[in-house]
Amino acid sequence: MDSDKDRTQTPIIFAPETYQYDKYELNESQLSKDPIDQFSKWFQEAKDDPRETLPEAITFCSAELPSGKVSSRVLLFKELDHRGFTIYSNWGTSGKAHDIATNPHAGMNFFWKDMQRQVRVEGNTEFVNRETSERYFKTRPRGSKIGAWASEQSHVIKDRQELDEATKKNTARFEGVEDVPCPPYWGGLRIVPMKIEFWQGRLNRLHDRFVYERASENDPWEIFRLSP
Ligand SMILES: Cc1cc2nc3c(=O)[nH]c(=O)nc-3n(C[C@H](O)[C@H](O)[C@H](O)COP(=O)(O)O)c2cc1C
Image (cartoon, rainbow, N blue to C red):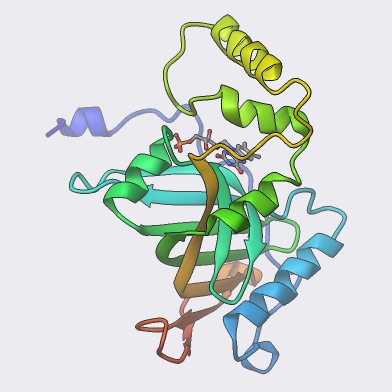
């Protein structure tokens, strides 16, 4: 273990200026019975707020087993259905692909700064079917479709040129092909939630927190208020 001296350092950054959370409240009478309905309502409110420029940006957390090492990255949340919350990525080479292959549990965190709200989603993951992945892939601009073929996401590359060459090669490969196909390793992963927390910032850090929990997909949701 480090000595006490090592653990007591002069901070480089110390207590950045912060602010009060005083815009909204969340109480029992406002909550929907179903967390998917509650999420839809909050997501729509975030979409409608012009200051929330990217409400679908999430932090996605995964953990490799058996080491238990956790990693997180920003992704874009793309779909909600009655089973859960879907993101799209490369499941061949990325770090998250490796983590999910060893441990299907994952978390997704939304932070809507201007609404002073956070939503935490935790659960088991499953890959969406091919048809669902292809439906979303079709909505991407052609350049992003080619990018999905060109990038071995999270593999080490020598330089930018290597990526540019892979892009050129794949641009040529799909020349004249109107519909660039979805790569076999690329697609959607859904978190089937077992826990969804809605957090509304309140004055003096006395926030409103409600968590919906269920033991399995076949169990009903229970709702608890949590201490801030
Ligand atoms: C705003 C933003 C949106 C992103 N959206 C995605 C996405 O939807 N899918 C994706 O695979 N990576 C996305 N990324 C890149 C990831 O943060 C990350 O670099 C990549 O997924 C590789 O991470 P991994 O090796 O840990 O899996 C996004 C990054 C940012 C900053």
